[in-house]
Length: 290
Image 1 (cartoon, rainbow, N blue to C red):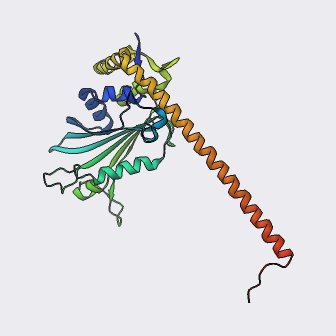
Image 2 (tube, rainbow, N blue to C red; image 1 turned 60 degrees about the horizontal axis):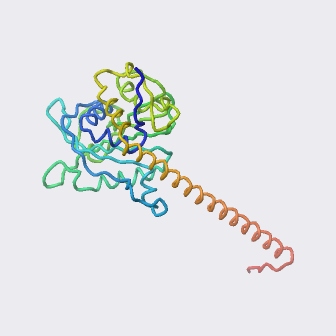
Image 3 (cartoon, rainbow, N blue to C red; image 1 turned 180 degrees about the vertical axis):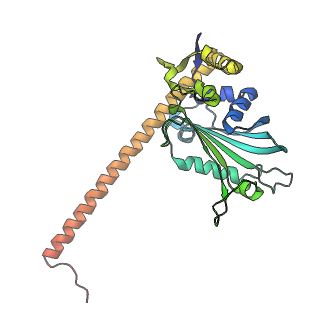
């Protein structure tokens, strides 16, 4: 059965499903490979206002490049539970890595990211990136970057955990949306197939999927996306995103054009300075130092 659903590459739709704690819990648990038993929403950056004027949205236009949602998650372990911060970021365009680093720095400094009432014991941070561009790894829709502790003398990898290591280093997962491309090698790639942009059918706001190919136990997610598609407000906000994104791209193009003009002028000035110096040398006008 073919089903038309809202495209979750849009921030509005992404938030629509991720603000559903059941969906968020399932997706995040599948990505990190650990069982989340409790999930609490934390700070979220960037809200697209209906009454915002695109010409006055320099800050918002910068923020629209990256959508962020943070969670406090209680995870089941073999010996009990642990509390971690999950920092979820999604980017539609190839963006400056420093944007991710700055936000990560804020998360590390935030005293709320502690696991004790005195706020002296740091909570481990998990970073998940949904990127609509590639980061240099072909045919790998989902990448995991994990910290490994090694005995330098022997090269032995040490398996035991440490509060010091966990507090100063973070684990990361990168979802390369463009690499999904109908790859269904495991349950996770099957689950993430709702982000596969090859399902765009003419209108980029819509994905047309064969629901029978989607795991039955996860069809509540496709139903939520169907619900989003049926919402007039969600459709209007997707159009707003297109409008703001167009404004952002035009702004960046103008800045790049100005930078190019300045660079050409600097190059011309440097060439003229070199010619003048050469003429002065030939005319014997160059001051000689003793």
